[in-house]
Amino acid sequence: MNQTFFVIALFSLQILYWIVGKFSSRKLKGKEDYFLAGKNVRFFPLMMTFLATQVGGGAVLGAADEAYRYGWSVLLYPLGASLGLIALGLGIGKRLAQFPVSTVAQILEIVYGSSSLKKVASALSVLSLFMVLVGQIVASKKFLLAIGFTNTPLFILFWGIIIFYTVRGGLKAVIATDISQAIFFAGAFLVTFAAVSSNTPWQPTVESFANASSKWTGWLLMPLLFMIIGQDMGQRCFAGNSASTVSKATFWAGIGTMIICFVPVFFGVIAKNLGLFIPQGSSVLMVAIEALTNPTTSAIIGCAVIAAIISTATSLINAISSNLSQDFFKNRESLRFMRSLTAILSIASIFFAFYCNNIVDILIQSYELSLSCLFIPIFIALFRPRGELLSAVLAVLFGICSFCIFKAFPPPLPSEVASILVSLAGFLSGEWLAQAKKKKALRT
Figure 1 (cartoon, rainbow, N blue to C red):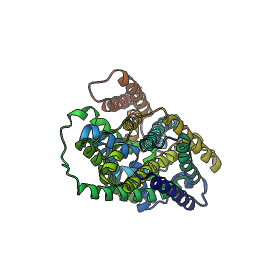
Figure 2: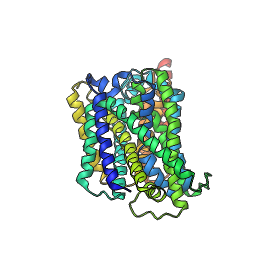
Figure 3: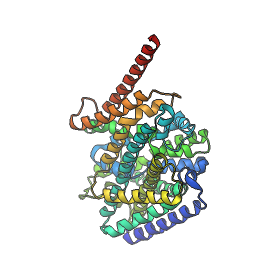
Figure 4: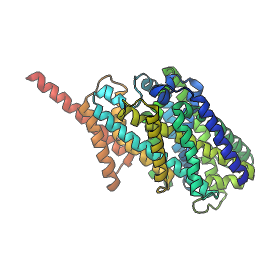
């Protein structure tokens, strides 16, 4: 890699993102502007911010690393995210957009009538999104270390710049930078793939999935289902200027996500087929790029990888801040307070990133925690105007207990599926108890 070109390009792009974010977020007016961009986001920017949010460290660096080990079966991971977006586009996103809320957790308060349940759901959402954010920072740390950048203060400064423009501009800044970042990384990945694939023998067939069978459900189901209940996705649905805009934007973002995420999986498989040696701690994607292209192209792809990571991280920062501000500090309208809260969370995630390593595993565990507890009550809430509070409470309790127990005592089913089924059993138990109570009341 041409490291001089990489450093110049990377910081030039950072300055560009800062300018774009600052220009787009002028004259912010209160929480709705800061967290939902005035609920007036149109099709193209909405589609691009959905795309940029999903194509991050896990879908790029993590997928390439896993593809080196497991082959084409890793396509199930981006396929899960892609199908989740398409599900939003086929109707789920429209249902989310029709609620008069700012966070997904607030839907539980409307349907089940409990502010305490809303706060529990919001806390679980914050924890999950925080760990996904940590995963993005881990991805950037591993990537920079792999290409020879070991300066910790420079790493912190790099993320400090990102935090600065995200904190100042809110969702408007995030969407504006997402557009520029998504155009850049999509173009870089697809052009490089076209050039390399035309000159490199490869066989795009799916080999036996036996070696990766224990990971299928995590790769496919976790990102798919999390898409429906995640605050980062819900926040964008709430920000769209209409339900039909949300449906179109999510559908096409799903198609784009699958196309772009095919590229890192391709390079992971090619690296394995060519027998490329991957030094300890290095990125499979970048080793393959450096072996198959020239130093300047490697530097451009390096900047594209960082752009993908940043676009996901800024979305997560804003979504976490939205959960905390809207669900726990609703009476605090000060922009200074919201910015301070966002900055504190972002700095904390950098600290935690130094104690984590595996990107995809971090993401899957984060998804599983929220899904085990919240998927059933939130998904059902999308289809009924009023629900039984007891059912939702039992679904959350059963889900969190099963998540913890299955870590110590693995069930015969994949733990991700088993936890959701146990949560569903809790919900149905609540429905049965509620109906029994009503019948008893009628008899008396």
